[in-house]
Length: 281
Image 1 (cartoon, rainbow, N blue to C red):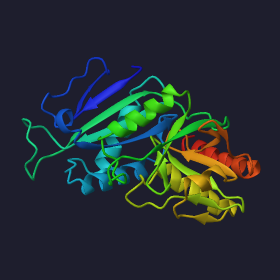
Image 2: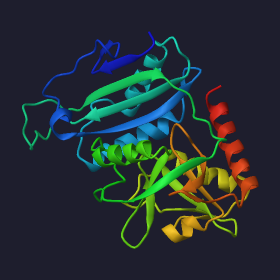
Image 3: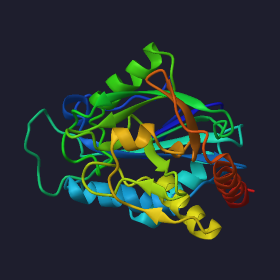
Image 4: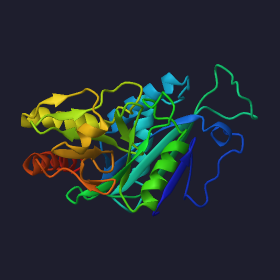
């Protein structure tokens, strides 16, 4: 098979698998999700992604029926069923199934969905262009919820403008994150600066590993907010996500940015890329 779907134990291709009409996701986007890559049939950073899923579920009172170990076993078994060793691994847990009602039984069990399809790590060595937009999302961005309409609109804005990402900012110019990435800067004095993991950003796993790379390479890290003005004048602007653990930006809103610390960027790319290859060899 070239792609695969899973729903509470049922397995089929993405075209043939169906789900219950009354799954609450259809009415409320009521669920949490994770995504990462598999290479050589090995899922990258699986335990960290499962830990974050359980944290997100707890914050919105979703009762996951599987244990962490059971979920990991299901995912590891499923990736072996595809003919392709390099895959995008996506899974979500929705609150459960019932006739539409805002309230739900306290003992409701979640529904596990999995989507597998061919996928590789993105090109890390080509610069990206981005645009900016006001961050009008809700105040629980630290939960990896399925309520992704704002992210969809921001991603579409980037698509229409022919750029890689939309970088978001709040009132006062504080930069938060992107439509599907975290964003960071390297200051002119060589500090890796990234927004704190408060309720305004998703605590990205790729972000955490970029910080790990900085510590390994002797790069100072500052986890405090930065502004649009700081970003536009920074030595480098970086993004990170599970499918592109590091990208560097050379254009924001049509203005040239970055380029002031190319050696540092290349060291980070090498470190992150090597970590991925070692973890999935």
